Image (cartoon, helix red, strand yellow):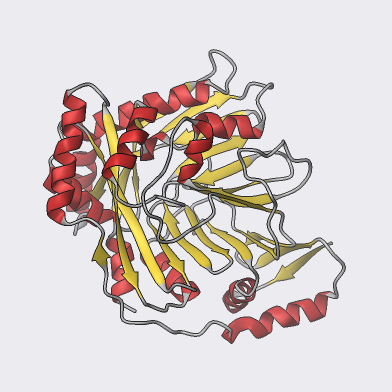
Length: 419
């Protein structure tokens, strides 16, 4: 059943509170980036369900005429390659999740909503129930004390060890990440998500709930999109803070654009992504359509490249995803050796971090982000964490890499410190 509703901002708030009463929901929020990001951003969509499916995107057969939402956790890598994950996991997200929405809300514009429900219901009563949800979410929060799983000294030591692997020829580049956490806290996930969006409105933002666990995501990065017969991946490598004035901001953009280090990092990952896409593509169709593009966000500038390919008709959706996952921007090159070293040098399991959240639509097209700039929260254990990382190359300086991590965590820290 489908309906069109006229709505306002208050109703949108009530709708998210209502969705939060269900075991599973995913809210994709592009923050008006649809026309500004190459190949568009996420659509603005809310999917809600009471149950999940007993499969993940790696085992999924090509769906027919239905929406599927969910995520791929980073550790699904172990089902793709001969790898393992033994580090402690303090959050416990499932490795993968798929669900078909019972309720689907698609924003046609700021004030018009398409509503799809897969069972009979009385429209006026249903809308009234949602409107009553405006006050369901309490503005509760605890004082948050953020701790690091790795000290600054340990971080710098690990960077030097990783650089030694590069010198020995084991890898060319490795994305090294570290976790920050807070225990025994209570937050309002919706309130925190909205505060994060206000500070960092991103094209691949997500509010995800799976049972008692939440991912509050402000991601600027696309992992993989299928649009018709075209595959698109847009890895990010290269980050610099915004300038304090328009003149300084322009100088920052120019500094990033002509940074030999950042361009080298970006080029290595583009080469990896190109190879990943070629595994699912018609021979000769894989190409880089933008190299070293500089894009401006509220907190920072990013260097983004775009790789395209025409999908081989023999490849299923699961084939395409398996051939490219995990995304090269969060592993390094060569990918398998980089992932082995990530397991060795990082001291917590990544879980959903550096995985992907997204959807498949009824046409068989899909879009997935890269799960970065994300707050993870377990409402049952009262445990909160976020992870940040950077690409380590032979030219990396450990102090600068740590500063880059702190820049990427800036919006998250501002939100948590304001609670």
